[in-house]
Length: 288
Image (tube, rainbow, N blue to C red; front, side, top):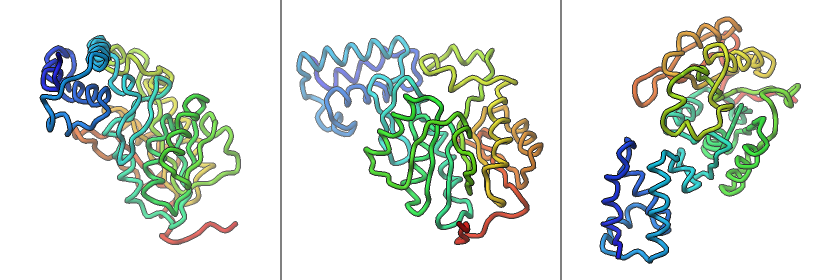
């Protein structure tokens, strides 16, 4: 017989994980259909044979390196519990910084926001959930990612967001936004981290970019000029050693008030800039 307590003690088997205890809790809670608090409230509860077998199988897959999010099909981001799958990046806590910054910006009451390369829809849906007066457009060139983001949008009932298939700005001709955000591919193809951890199981197309990881960021900055209103903002996530290079790219394409913000580990991981000399004023509306 396997008790909850005994199952949790198997965390010691995940020697290659830097979050072994949490991984074990998440997998066991998933199998039992409970939350993590329940596990410590009922440590002597006995798993059924089916539950014990399912948990053991998931633990073995985690020991082989598969991400917990892929094993459970879910990931928490901001206040949302999102569906995830191998077609997209797994939302990470550091990326919540993008949402925090977006909510701080002096945007109009009915701002138009664009999320490029939305993946699961995490950034777009988190922003839209916090600002119901804003209209958020999320795009991705991968149809499977768009379907996943739409599933998350519908499940959370977020009516002020829409999800479209578009390769960056390709399907957005004539559209203007107050804020463009993106967590694009920014890892160089020869980066050794691509062979480590969860990224081994994530799509390389969402991770790797040419020009030492800057190619897609450059495309985004270049295209933003035609898709931002004067006084609009561009914000991207990037690698921990890329902040200076990204600031240079923003400057090359005419952005001002450029700054980089630090993530939870203290690295500069998000850069933003303003198109024009001053931001649009709060409450100002675009004329139709």
